[in-house]
Each structure stands twice: as C-alpha cells, then as structure tokens.
Image (cartoon, rainbow, N blue to C red; front, side, top):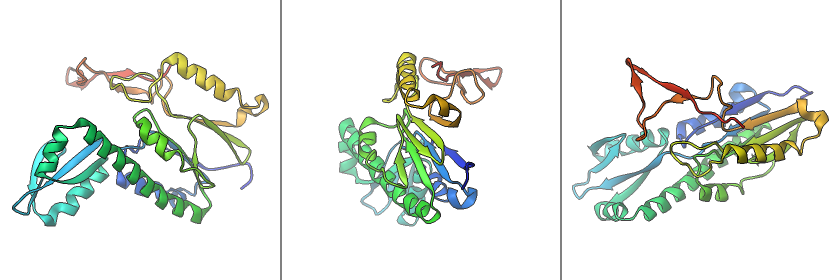
Length: 256
C-alpha cells in the first residue's frame, strides 16, 4: 500500500437502508483502503403500520395517511426504510397502546435502531473483509445514548469503533469525535463549546508532536464559518425563515 492511502468519508446516513447498502459497496466502487463513517447513524422515527380487520393496512407515510392492500406492503416498508424510518407492524389495539405510552414507543424504536444497525454492519463487515478494507465508525449527536452503549461492542479487525479514540493506520493517525455543539433540537450527544474543546485537546494530546502532520481528524460537527456548516435559520418553533422567497441560512458549526 505504501504511505499513500485512499480514505472515503461518509456521514449522516440517518438510518437509510439504501444508504447503508451503498456503504457496503464503497470498497469495490472507490477502491478505498479505509472508510470513515462519521456519525448520525440512526433513523428518524418509528412508523407504525396498522393491520386492519378488512385485511388492508394503514400508516402515516411522510405526513400523509395511506391505506393499502398487502400487495403494496413490501413497497411501503422499503420506502420507509430507505427514508430512514423504522416500519413496525401493529394491530389497532397495539397502536392505541403506543399512543398512550411514549416510553413504549421509545423502547420499540431503540430496539429497531440497534437491530437494524447490527444487521447492516454484518453485511458491511462481510463485504469489507473480502476487500481487506476497514470501517472506522462512530455515532453523532443524533444517536441516542442507549443505542451508542449497545453498538460500541461492534469493534474488531474490520469494524473499528472510533468515538473519542485514536488509531494508527499505515503511518497515519485517525482521530474520531462524534459529539456536537448545542442545537435547536437538544439531541442527546451535545456538549458545550468549552467541553468540546477540552475533549479534543485531550485527544490531540495523545498524539506525538512529530506525527501531527499525519493526523486525519474525523469530527462530526463542522467548524463554524465554513462552507459545510450552513443550515436554515429557524424560528423559535423550528420553522425555516423565508425572506423574499429565499430560505435564510446561518453558520451553526463549532467554534471549538
């Protein structure tokens, strides 16, 4: 391989099944030596699909209630998974129970997040092993703590768990950090700018000063005032601000 390596950086798959399928093909398509999966691994929400007494199904599909027969079920579930949702088959009674129990919804959602990710990683590991490629991965700010605690065990010679961790790879040093600065959504893995700076300083202090020019720092949150940290400016109720027909943008990255 020599000193040169080909690195492919991937981020924010947000539970999309089609995105994870593409991830498994990265070694073949891009001839990568190592792939870095840089956070926000999990999907958006649970999508209950209700089995009706007449043999049909109904669900809220992307904000619109749809009723369909069994011939469309696979297609609906595939579209949901590809868009980062977790379809979940229920009876009307089970659906009513979910409406009354946010804790149960969260329990089911977390279970599906974990099982889906583990299934995707099994396929990725099998594929990457064929090409002698490694995946250095870590969660982002959107990924719940209970999910993170479960998946960090996926750590071997191919799948390398990398949050707040440093590894050496072919004379390069790869550093991973998956937290973010505060966001309007108050996600679970957010830190103050001061805490981000403290933790990054601690990580970089582990690197030999003579090797700093060989560091590849994979950090989930982008630096502030760059081309990659622009996001829509929001109202207090989290709606995009539109002025003159154009969406207002602002820099939201970390100053750390």
